[in-house]
Length: 278
Ligand code: GDP
Image (tube, rainbow, N blue to C red; front, top):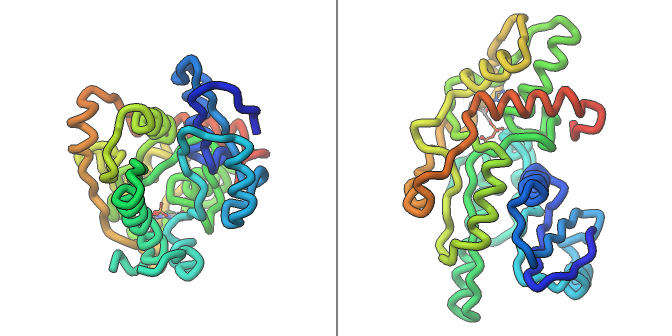
């Protein structure tokens, strides 16, 4: 954990995860402003499910702003397996991930209540399927893109086929973690609504799982066979989200083209294979 010092002090929980690392990179690349102090913490610094440890962390850092990223997260198959663990609030989304979904919805309820009772302008961002360097590339627990990247890596080294789970027909809007990091910083500085905001590429940029697999195959120059295991769940067919609100604020924001972002993520995984979470 870095030591605090400036007048605006931003505490980022979940600082070592996919989005936390992307924010660190974007800040280090020049997105931070003079006088801003960014403090990134991970579960090693404090257990945020423990009230005393959380209070001690806040007393030590004394943040003026918090980007709260720490959470239990996973892909479709982990969500299916651990609905009970994901369900952390009292409170009908898609059956495959109702636990995770209710927990996220309740954040919005909590933010509205804080505003009504105490005037706090906490807000929630709703990103679509995030991927990028520092993701969890575990095949069983992770999301589809890191899972496919890891599977292609293994298929290449063993000369076997790539097995895509499900029919390949479901559709997703993927967002590159470094694009999301820039949007997070914008939300922190400029967005002052309590109402949540969807951070996503446009609806026209939605791709099928098969197209996502093809992008990985191309990026990693995989020449083997690609098969679909239809005994595995497809999960929700689509979750199309409008980025219309984001576009009214930021009409000119440029997302990294999907294929380029996939290429960069594949290259990161190949170069960091030993240290990558998998
Ligand atoms: P979601 O977007 O929250 O549903 O979660 P995922 O990122 O796990 O994406 C799930 C979709 O990708 C489903 O349609 C799965 O059938 C499909 N899929 C194909 N191959 C894989 C894989 O290797 N891992 C995962 N997690 N999903 C896969």
